[in-house]
Amino acid sequence: MIGCSDPNSKPEYGDESGLPKNCRAYIQESVNAWRNGVHSTEDTMDAIERNCGVYGDLWGE
Image 1 (cartoon, rainbow, N blue to C red):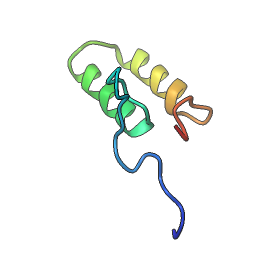
Image 2: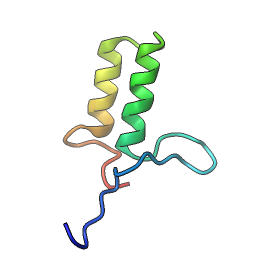
Image 3: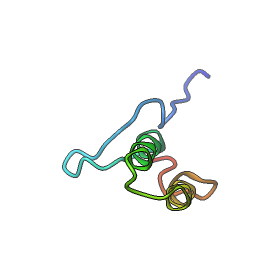
Image 4: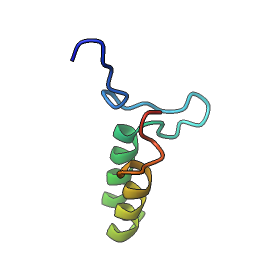
């Protein structure tokens, strides 16, 4: 689409914190943590829904 930018076209992280700033980065970090056994599947899915679901906090950041 002309004139339309996708805030999730690439992963973005906070300059000082290094934490994910958009859904693309957040989802990858979540998958990595789940694969490394840091979080359960249920916790990971709940967090993805909370941050990147329909009413997610990270959309448009």
